[in-house]
Amino acid sequence: MVVKRKKVAVITGASSGFGRAAAVKLMKHGWYVIILARRLKRIVALQNEFGVDNCYAMSFDVCSVEDIKSLVEFIDKQSISVDLLVNNAGLALGLNSADKADVNDWQCMIDTNCTGLVNVTRALLPAMIAVQKGHIINIGSIAGTYAYPGGNTYGATKAFVAQFSLNLRADLAGSGIRVTNIEPGLAETEFSLVRFHGDEKKAKSVYEDVQPLTAEDVAETIFWCASLPSHVNVNRLELMPTCQAFSPLSVTKSSTTEPL
Ligand code: NDP
Ligand code: 8X3
Image 1 (cartoon, rainbow, N blue to C red):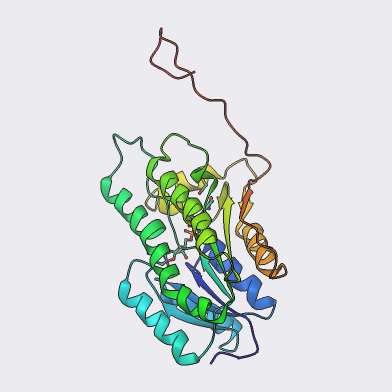
Image 2 (cartoon, rainbow, N blue to C red; image 1 turned 60 degrees about the horizontal axis):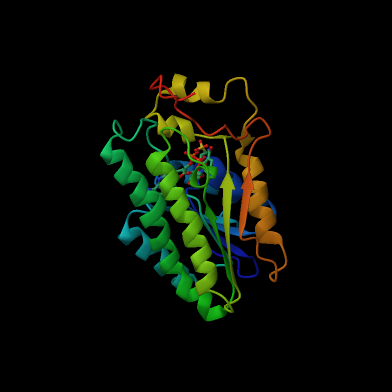
């Protein structure tokens, strides 16, 4: 049962990584969190750990119109208003160049990172508008700004998230609703395991000999943005681990086909 005096957050993709860490952070600071993911066992374990006064676990696929409808019905039934929506569910699939990439992977990234995100937002926005308050935090990526080989469709979905966030700001001017796009760089979560279709060795090698961001680092930025006074809107927040930086642009000499 939702405890009425608590602030309410909805987090998609709360079974792992940033989403789970953000849910924990918010609950530890007195929020009530509706935790959503497809892997119900995991979020039910989180619910058991923190108790039903602090969270509610709901099986949820951002690509399912039915699940989105059920979420809205649940919120309506509880007569609560959502103070914070964290559109975090997302994934990268594959790191092949565009000519070798699997189009099914591309479609899944577009469905999840773009279509799912806009549909969840569209479903929860009217109730926020009605009470003239709320905060939507989207999880973008540095991949939406900086191109890298194999980033093709993944990076493009995150560029979409960045522009959608800015356009939401434009639509919501004067509504009291805040919109933030958080754009992390390399962070150790299940992200690479998913990207490499369950290849643990390949996933582990991404984080070897480096100090990546942690899920808790990103949760901290989510919490900070959400905790600022309501007149402060962080439009976008980009963070990287210190070990990550920018590469030079590649220039291919005519004597070779290899980029320098
Ligand atoms: P994880 O793989 O650890 O977590 C991803 C979460 O998204 C899981 O809880 C997963 O839950 C959920 N998810 C995936 N697809 C769906 C779906 N169709 N419906 C509902 N939930 C879904 O990765 P991260 O925590 O790293 O990723 C979180 C977000 O951060 C993503 O949007 C990612 O693109 C972004 N990001 C990640 C970075 C990184 O380096 N790790 C850097 C920058 C951005 P379940 O499978 O149970 O449904
Ligand atoms: C994830 C960060 O750089 O691996 O969005 O694409 S990166």
